[in-house]
Length: 492
Ligand code: SF4
Image 1: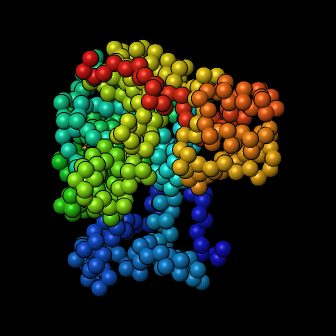
Image 2: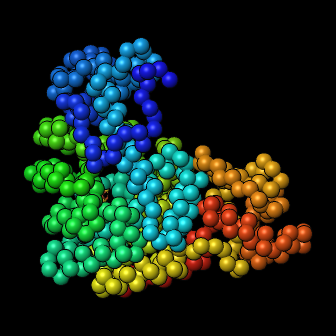
Image 3: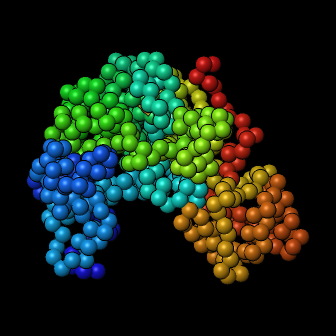
């Protein structure tokens, strides 16, 4: 490593709470990176004449030699290998990105206080890595809960991965609802731990700004859990002053990055025009209007469009492969709709005919008050977050197309998939066990008995199977078509 290379471990940098940009103009520089990534006409113009392109985009203060290091990989490598240090602006931008990565990692690595929940969530994370790969893992935080404060959404994005319904009103932050809301947050803090609960957020198939009292809800969240939940809005320009006030509020609370989901190029330009670059330093712009910069998961509405095209015999771009992509869900926990008083236990999965929105619903129920929510949470942890396979449970690999077993030693079984390897030593008859699990068994009892006939102790087999189960590579008992949800539908 030369003296100029920056360390790659994001944990080397300060925590988000202590982060201060150490250089003037970082917001403008970030804006240049955003423009290059999202605006392909700008890219073309920049390729012809860097200075002229930057000037006409209002980015006069940016040095193109610095921007090039961020947007061209070969320039980044050359800059890292040069004998002179990378320019201070580039170093500052890289540091900023590392602080964001560190924060995302801290959220992903945070742990529920409850051991059953902890082990279940770990399995859900592993299962996601096996099926969708380590790159996807980086983006899915498996948050503890999402609270919807409206019914439906007014925005109606064509790509909505959770297929939001039509807007039908919002919860008001009146006295009874405030009491309920604070009580719900306290319940979550009690049952899963305040440090974990603070990684929840307040939207799902809803637009935060559709709720007229959204800011009061999130401020109460901050009071109860000590963190202002991240906002992602698709209508930052609906009322720029309101957006600005929310950003200001975030700056005065324990909070970090907010996100604008930018659905049109017009909005992208307007955001860059109306907001000061430094005002948006801690705002991530997601250029939804440009597929090349922001590819869509094949879930929800995108999946329906793909299926329609297939039905019509039309070609489907490879990035919308129905098998290999598909989920924007990022909660392994509770999806709560406040106006409907409805709560579901959910976890991400690939979108399928059974789960077209890219998350499984393990259980759903209405609740009347905070104690009702507590009962649901406790019951889910006890009954749905299973800890091992029971004798009657089917044994099969959850993602046979993605997971392989390797036997490096007679008593070692490695589970490999999605760029991850989990090595298990001390597995008696590892090759035999791997083979039987590959073939599947109608029940754990059947597999144990068959192995016993081959000379393996039942206790060893049960132990081996449950180690595989805890690794997240076996199908969950409540992830089978015959699993009947304990459900009361919203319309009931
Ligand atoms: S993507 Fe978000 S803003 Fe767009 S329709 Fe879905 S929930 Fe609404």
